[in-house]
Length: 315
Image (cartoon, rainbow, N blue to C red; front, side, top):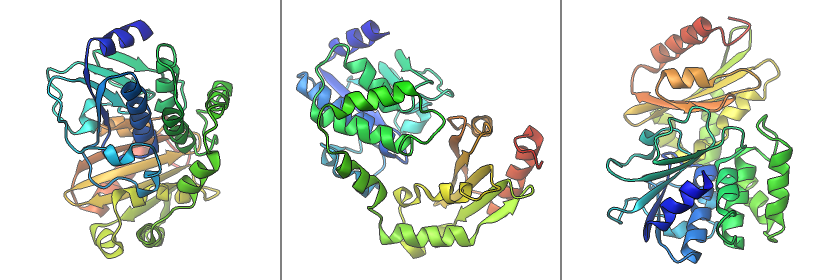
């Protein structure tokens, strides 16, 4: 797999690195880390995300300001980061060769070469372990990879964390990156809009199935009133999961002309529900996007599907 990935990269002078829609730290950190490595390798590289509203708390990452919102290079190699499906990228990539770097079990293996490691805790771990085999690492790249790792594992607290995860993190820290800077930006930089939309979402919280399911809603009206962007919604669903009886938490986001769903669980597999809607993710963290419809009816149907799948004991 390493040889195939290296050969694919070596065939191209121009490379476009893509992260997925509604980006968070793992997809952007992985993309920016690869950008730093390939730039130093002498490639002409661009880093791209289709969304214009990027998480402000990640602007400390090297080359963050260089993120474009369209692919400028024609016939470049495409490297995708943390995207289980090509549809999550938002671009027409037909006819392009793709190096797919991912860690989702729901990956559709859409790449010309697929470096997909479901046992890895973050996509940045996949990229880090891949590129260090044939390129010299540098501090800029490792800072991006480390930020992605600690964010996606919620500071090494998710079930995906293993001894290998800590070994990789330990190796990254030898590059003398400022881990306190990472912690501050990930945990302590919040916008006022994010506090306002969190308040609105918590006020909507309802418990179902003997308290095992928590459902919160962020409506279009609440988003407009708070001034919140998609990035301000990151982490809200975890507040529902923090309740003692809750096994699964869901945040339903009414975003312009569609609905986005973010799901978290403590132990049960929720990825099957996301896949049934054309989404994906991990066993305990998944999501999907669907067309706009009546929110209350949508939630009722979702509850019925959770019951039919037998995801929760209380169903």
